[in-house]
Image (tube, rainbow over all chains, first blue to last red; front, side, top):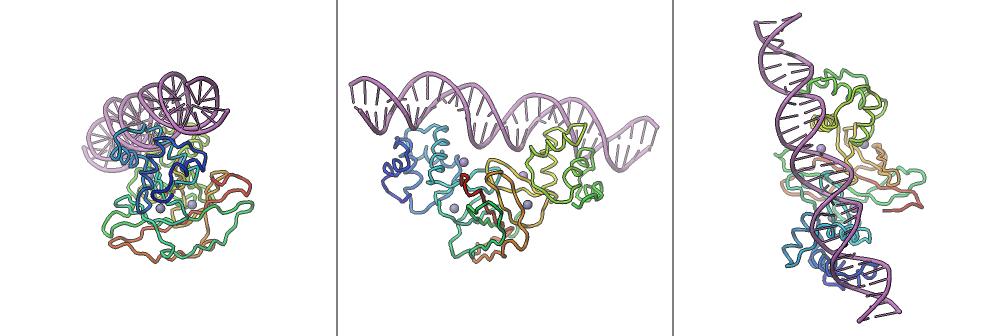
Length: 142
Length: 142
DNA sequence: AATCTACATTATAATAATTCTAAACTATTG
DNA sequence: CAATAGTTTAGAATTATTATAATGTAGATT
Ligand SMILES: [Mn+2]
Ligand SMILES: [Mn+2]
Ligand SMILES: [Zn+2]
Ligand SMILES: [Zn+2]
């Protein structure tokens, strides 16, 4: 979703009612220069900082998953102990900083196109994603 | 760990006491032709099937993480809702079947070497892993 | 072989993340 | 505006995992 777009329209487009809470969440998620990565907890914090009214935790979960299902958010698996979401829903690779637990997007140009030779009968490829784990030279390397 | 190896020795090598439970878990995990992928739940089931005595759930968690820390198991993140472990601890890529929720190992030859152009200051690359999600042509594609 | 002791195991309780429930509320439609 | 279907909410329930503290045991010491 582009910045400052018509959130009400975008929600209607995919059959979601443009409720107060959903519009607020759109603003928090998409009204910014760059896409970003977050956990549900991050998001709850961000919402309560930017708002006077609160959105209940259950609604945040529901809405994040509703947005995910409609293709407005993407879930990223890195750490089995944490769920990350990404407002950048296009296919892209990631660096994961094991010191700070931060996700960093790769550009097109950062990693050459992956060439897959194997083919699994009856199955088609839905996505190909690379995760590059990095850490400081001195630090633990897990 | 190779099949039918000296588990007691292997445990001692890394400073783990060769207790009854750990030896049993080694047998369940490593006495087989091929490496495999499992969840804690799978493993608990496998153990109780192959045994008369039970190993408590807490011990299974503790031991899996102890083995992971010592490099005898690897944790794989695919699905934020499930933790998978791998008895193949070498660097390798995976296919993930979204229909059956099965992990499939890639051979060296299945995916060309990944060339990473970006470099993050002060950080070094710990691992580079590719996950290819596949699903049946007809099925849901997430 | 009996005893010792550090470490491991265990059952259980605790915590954390997420989902369910069912009642109250609200956006849309007519 | 009233009817309706969809949505929000607090709190309970569920699930996965970790912490705790009493008990057990491997390996060392006598
Ligand atoms: Mn999800
Ligand atoms: Mn782990
Ligand atoms: Zn991203
Ligand atoms: Zn594997």
